[in-house]
Image (cartoon, rainbow, N blue to C red; front, side, top):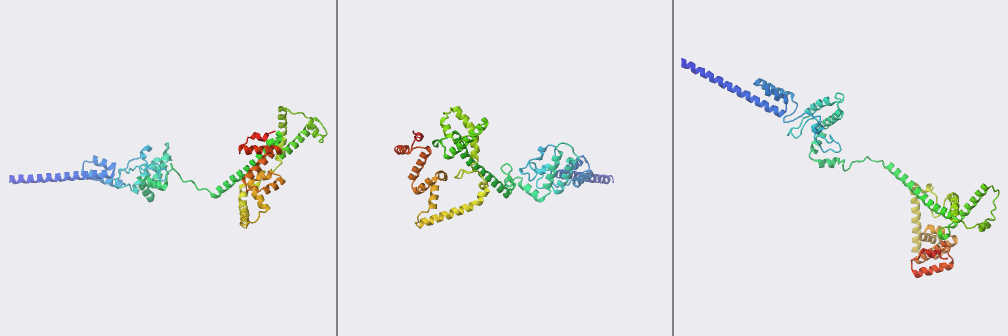
Amino acid sequence: MVASQGGSARTIFYRRVWIAALLLLAVVFAASCSLVHAQEDDSTTAAASTEESGSTESSSSGSSDSRSNSDLPPKETRRSTSDNKDDWGSFYDPNNVFCGKFDCYKILGFDHETWGSDPPSLKAITKSYRNLSRKWHPDKNKAKGARERFVAISKAYEILTNFEKRAEYDHFRDRPDEYFKKYGSSVLWAYAPKSDASIIIMLFLLAGSAFTYYAQKNRWQTIANHLVRAATEDWSPREGGSKESTEIREKALAILAQKKDLQSGAVETNGTNNGEKKKKVPKMTPREKKKEWEELRPICIDLVNEIDDFGAGFRKPTLQDLLVIRMVKWPYYVMNSTLWWSKYAFRRLGKMDLNDEEREVLTKNTIGEVAWIAVSDEERANVLTLELWKSTDALVEWKEEQEFKRAGLSMTKMKQLKKLRKKGGSTTEDDDLHMD
């Protein structure tokens, strides 16, 4: 009886030990499951409650609280954003299409290197954005840089909650070459705003018109300056003087004499004795010449300014010289020129004789318009008979004769120079033109 009671007592003891062992194994298993699950959810609250719990009920409750309070999917790591912007990572975004040089995920506290194959969900991103926006909103946070940080957080939230933008952002993470193909690089180039073509054309026409106007004025001014100096210093033909410069000098001397007579109190000026006065006037010294030039120069300038056209295209600018007006007239000039040369070619094919108009055009093109304007009417008639466009030697000889005439050489000296030039070839000293 005693043996049976002892056996039953041992059986009960073994059962209790077995039940206790099973309960202990259950507690250990539940605790390990909760710890693993808490690590995968990255919930600090669940981990703390699991470590402090010593029983099965506290472990299971801690695990359930961790699962209910965590909005992040499994294998997702999140950290709190630091006040240092260096913790925001980096991203190739030179054109600020996404979050600029920072990583949108790290701005909201996510690390793409740790979440594995389960990126943060839309709900987790929204929750992180709300927490950070409450912290860094400029109305609540008066710290320096809070506004800029809030703007960056809002931009990151805008990108990551847009399905297309987020997919593009994830695609470009490791593909900067594709980003460059689509958005380019602000370092190398950038899209410029489109310009209005009409404004560009107007500016071009204005600039071109101003250029042609002042170019024409410069052409006239070049001849005017030469004429003023020749008249003031009384240049001879061989020095560059001309009939026009002599006439201007005579007028300037008469005006200067009148001024001197008025200043001296003279009532009348006898112009008939000018020749006698010139003969009696002694040769002036260099100082007296320079003084006379200073007195004559402003008078000559006024007289030259009254001349609007020197001929051969050297005239004062008008509205006709503006680029806009010239462009309007170009079709007319081109059409006339084409018709004239077509008519000329037709007459040459028909072996017809040259008429006066054709001779004049050919001669003018050969010697130049300036030389054509410079010669007298008698010389023009003579030049037309020479047919200079046919022979280069005849053209060279004619230019030499004009050079000798401008130098004021006699026929004898002209013949001497021609002989010297034929003997010496084409090289001739300039002093030959000043032979006495």
